Image (cartoon, rainbow, N blue to C red; front, side):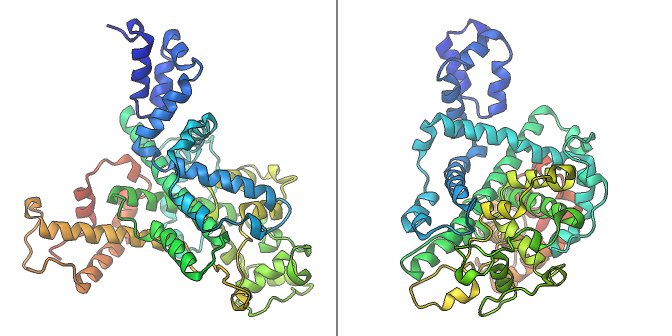
Length: 463
């Protein structure tokens, strides 16, 4: 019996039982009859909604859509000023809702369509990950990714998204594993994207007490650094996505000094009416970056002084809240097609991202109530800690569950002591320095390994 001979209701149910958006679209395009079923009024929304709810790889999408919708509303305010007015800042109740999104959002066809669009749009970044020219530059840049001191890029790595040449590691995969590779990439990308959105939210939020702020900032911090709900595979995938998108690609944007400029090219020099005491946004940002107790105005020759100064902090700030669509857009404007810079308003772009909406150093001492202050640097080291926590937890299970038979331990204590924890940390650091670069980096999404296999790659319990 063929699919075409089944009742439409049965065929619709088959569509709904799929767990990949691309599978549904391929099935719908296989013949006119199935295409008509897919495109009947309400069917596409029902099918895509079911797939999003069923799929492990869309588990972050609902929360992400709620967060991106809020940021889009704030972008309209940022178009004219660098800070949200107090009445528009998310309070404790709203911050809580961002951590506990309602499934009712999926009742909206617009939300479902947004998720489907995001699924397709992020393939641009995955295609870059699979390009041989980009991959070769990425693999050669391991040290600079960790030290946050990018070197001058080669010519190949900015060849753009339409350059030919897929890496062999991906090209040789069977179709099902290629699909699985993108699913894992997308899950990792959206997982960290949610963390980025929540980082920005806590940065601009308002709370009645410092205790409330600390509570929600800790939840954001733990999402980066200690998330027991994630498997070791997902944590390693996030580590790779963070390194590739937020470190390697963002570094490539700013490697081209002729195009990227200095911090003075990205932040307004002219005073704003909303800026205290007629300081410019650049005055405030640079004073904050330099750790001054009070803001000061830049001198007339500030361009020379800012040639290198403060740019590193600016890029780090940008990394902590830049979203994947912005990475794609900036690559297009500054790396792939510099001609598109015509009419590109960089200060307005930075404003809309929300980079400048933070509490500065001197505002901590004000006596008119508690002010949130962005004290934690969210960077790749936090994801590193998250991996270490999983390695430690897995080691604990290996020691206590004899059925695994991975190794024989003389230590009768079932806990992981400080000495062992330090040993695991050293082993992970050693693995990152060499084996990770040759075995996993640039191809982790193409590998299929169990949790125990991943653990044994990194940790030797007999050492």
